[in-house]
Length: 113
Image (cartoon, rainbow, N blue to C red):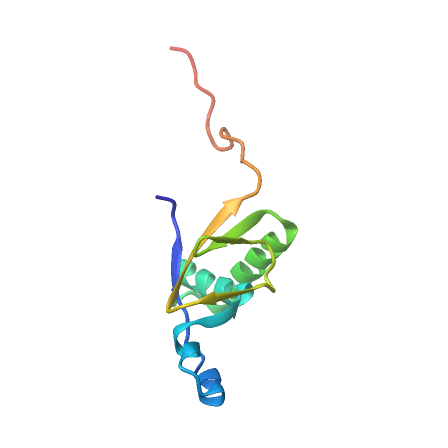
């Protein structure tokens, strides 16, 4: 199983009250950028300093915009932070690099004995 971040999706009570429909309580439209905000907060922890959160979120959004990775939310892939996805109570978020990293990036060369 691939690592993922599961985030809770807030209920849009205003849409329920104004629209008079309970359907909005079951499915909430969310921008990808908002879901990434929740995912970054979940990944770095709720007690992380706000400046660290801001830097991490900015780097994540910049990486998505630059095409460094794609986002998979509940089985659907996204490359645009302004796209909208409909979620129920939670969203499973996975990050996929668009290019493979070098396998020997941090490995030391083996020496013969």
